[in-house]
Length: 338
Image (cartoon, rainbow, N blue to C red):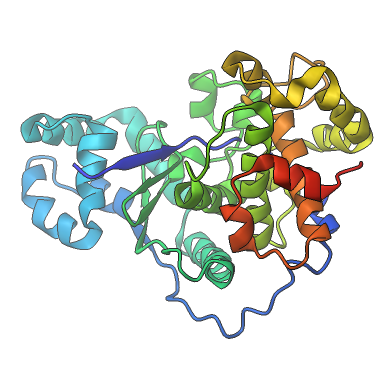
């Protein structure tokens, strides 16, 4: 079975990324990519005759390629037994909750909404291609439904989007699942394109360098978010990183103190994974600092360091940034002084 990469996206700062000025204001008029089209695997699955699931395989494989097998054996029914997988599909289609979920998805993601998503993805991947012309673009973008298990996933050259993970924070299924507010708040269509691009960026640059202390984590994620700045130049920071307006205000107000905190007691060079997780893990807040401090605060600081680095080193391209594996060099040349 083909490799499946599940992207766990940090789920968003109301201020725009103004600090990079014109650095990322580029002309993409000469960049031509194939317009992104979203294939609706979710619709094709729910249109199946449950008594003839196996008969659909040739047609589905032709349309969706290896992602169909990945969906069947890696997402819906992990394993390799075809008969049990087909039974799993049949049970999935006929389950009352899944039927209602599918109706919710179709109500929100009509043709106009899908066209909007396609247009925004095409624009974002045009920017991606401008900055990374040698990096592959997705050959297929596939919308699917997994029963609230996956939001964004990559498999080979396919970008998969779990539409049921973007139904709006008040959706009854999220309440039934008893998901915490910090997770539910960003499960709406406004975050779909940003999450999809984040997933593709992670897929493109993950494991590109050693990450062995807190500073390395900060710079690694700072670079990823700077890529988000590049491919989503008109998207608010709140959508990119997953903070509320209050959390954004906190970061802005206390940026200097937060940086001072990380530079104290040699924290930047801590390599204990449990301690690193305190500053990089998802959650309602960063408990090691305060209940008012947003989660993943080290990533936010890393983002600001990378922005400072790119502003002060104008000859460094985005490609060169992503190839720079020495976090200490980036920190030193960033001359970050909030």
